[in-house]
Image (cartoon, rainbow, N blue to C red; front, side, top):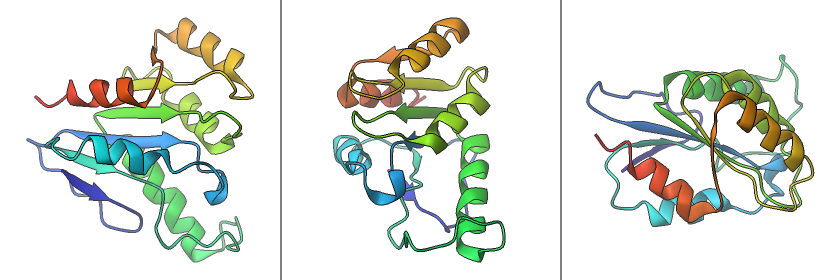
Length: 153
């Protein structure tokens, strides 16, 4: 498995499958679910796009004029576009406003899988959007792992 983080250049060869890890980060306050998922996928042969940047600084101005923030958002948008699969994890106790935006952007794409456990503050909205647009929902991170493994080709 190859894992890419911002600001690494996103290169995915034609024969490689890819997944984007969309989900709760909340400026670094949310649980690090990405690490748990990556550990369970260590034998998966594909490219993982992980937006949880190791050198993130929550002091960065969230402005189009701030170079690292601008780079981060554009990296995420490119990753979402290029990924074969987008997995969304809405962590209980988090708000994840950017993840809500990203789900809205790709709800009709056919490449979304959602895990929204009880305790996420807008679970009802997520459930309705998933039902309306035929988005697969799974109960936990183990099931997200299984969805990723299905695209191994």
